[in-house]
Length: 387
Image (tube, rainbow, N blue to C red):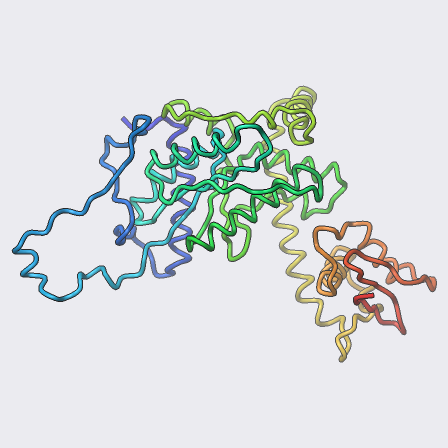
């Protein structure tokens, strides 16, 4: 009998992402790789069960007989010069989503010859967070993940507590990936998280890019992968339960002081009560459709940008005016960022003000932007530069 449907679903999602990673590593790859030197070996069919707490997996190389030694001589072993198997890390908080992801990675990676490890980030925002992080590392180790480590970070204040914690977490994960030479980091965001992200973007009055939510692949060189964006949160929790995986429920996720927590426990249930079931699925679908549209508009803006610049590289206002607003504003935003405006501080209202220099020109003065960048109209040209 096969695994529970929830377990099968999370494993399939992870397997697909790992296949994508292998394909990107080797375009000619069309069959599963045999485990490379240093990679964990596939588990026996009855080894799907999580090891009992306190146990650790260890793999010892078989002893070489004198006959083997004589036959090998002084020649190097065939796999000694082979490239090392790619390493994939899972970011794990100890919650149901990330523990389900860690268990699926531990099961699927060895079968594809991929090394698998885990990272947990200690934000230091709750008493005993260091002890909790140590427990998560122990669970990752028991699953057979290596390396498995905890990283302590200091959370700043910029952008509010949620944004500051997120920035510190991703900085730690980036550092870990570079230190270990990891090809990718898996994140446990689910379809429910995607729906919440779309609603938060809608509440901010953001554009279509914000409504597109989280990408399945993001970060430098596609480092971050989100296998669970098409799975609901309940599937991940059920997978942990049937595998007897202990999980930790972060009290911050139920704290009404946090916007996302209020949305999760009050906003979305109210929407489902008013509109009926299926709101989460519809919002996640909206995210994907918005992302497709945003990608197409970004590509259009990238192609059109060269045609609206003069020989000296300045933007020509008349040519910008002729473009559709969605394309023009993308060009303006990109120009502001290239001039030094921080992308995270550049909001829709800033771009609208620049756009008025094109569409509502009445001799107005320069526009001050974040990062000490100034935008102004001069002789039919739009000049965006450091002030």
